[in-house]
Amino acid sequence: MPPRKEVGFMDVDSDSDISIPDDIDAPRRNKGKGKAKAGDKRKIASHKAKSNDQAYAWEATYTRSWEAVQEDEAGSLQSSVQELLARGRRRRFLTLAAPIRRTIIRHLILILDLSASMMDRDMRPTRFDLTLQYAREFIAEWFDQNPLGQIGIVGMRAGLGERICEMSGNPQDVLKSIADRHKLEPVGEPSLQNAVEMARTTMSHLPTHSSREMVIIFGSLTTCDPGNIHETLDECVKSKIRISVVALAAEMKICRELCDKTGGQFGVAMNEGHYKDLLFELIPPPAQKALAAVAGATGATTSANPAADLMMMGFPTRLPESSQPTLCVCHSELKSQGFLCPRCQAKVCDVPTDCDICGLMIVSSPHLARSYHHLFPVKPYDAV
Image 1 (tube, rainbow, N blue to C red):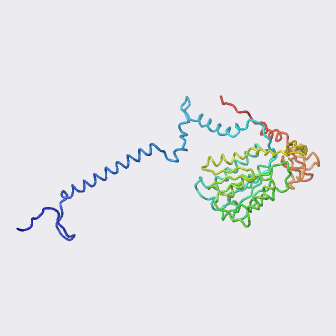
Image 2 (cartoon, rainbow, N blue to C red; image 1 turned 135 degrees about the vertical axis):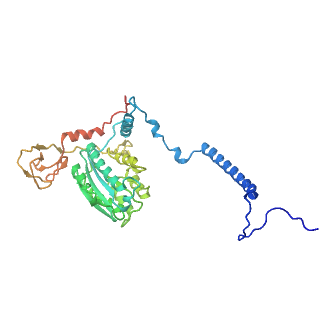
Image 3 (tube, rainbow, N blue to C red; image 1 turned 90 degrees about the horizontal axis):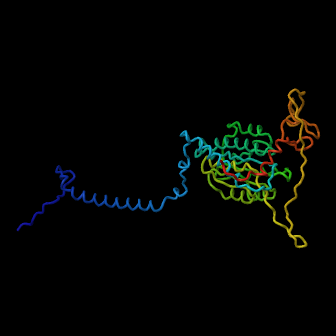
């Protein structure tokens, strides 16, 4: 009896002209697709259930800011936006309810990172252009709130520290030094040690009654130093220099140590708005730290805080435009306008400043009165 032939699939060569009908293999293919679709549906359903139970990490800290903005009676959002901006300005002042001892005569060195990393575009238009814009706004606001202070600017570029502007109490001179963008074109690697050492030597001659501060805007993740930067940090601690750092890339251990050991502030900017907030939080004068109490020979504890010292200041005489042109001691130029030192009668162009002849600090009464508003902050209040 010949073997029984089964009707089914046959082996077909690739060169053969015989074609297998689609309806023969369709049931097997559809069966496999059905299993795959059912498995995918189960996976999608389980993934949705898991996502509903547990949110993503970035969703936990995300705030729906658009829900806090409400339209006014006219259908405009302008009033809500203005209220949010005003609330942000008052945020750092409302916490200071009690009077705190502060230094009203401040000396600050602004250290700018001018390395190649400042050309990154993670902050629009670039880190460099945004830093110059915020630096100009920072200087103008700083002098408005600290009229008796002085600012100098140092740049970090090509592994060196570059002095951009000498210490000056005139905001126009400081703003003029960073007005030309092409002179500050970023190049090379930064050097924290060279810049901090240059700023420290600039403030080494300052009197003890004034504060010594550095604000570093750092956008790189590396620093090219010629020596041990920790030795420079120890010298800054001995000189009582307060260092604050605003990082644009990420937190670095040496930047954190610079701030922690000198009593400054450290922050990493997350976006353009946060960058400006971190920078403008350094405008009010820092509070003086109380020293530890010292036990006397009789066992009684006495405070080691230094007593308040009196300072000698001079209120100058302002010369009108109609006065005779004379040489000023600061620029050696013939000018009609100016101020006369009450001690030596030397002519200076602007106040507040220190007289180049006798060394007397020359201030005007409005500047002195405006410097005192930090010592008596406004009590917390509710906007009506």
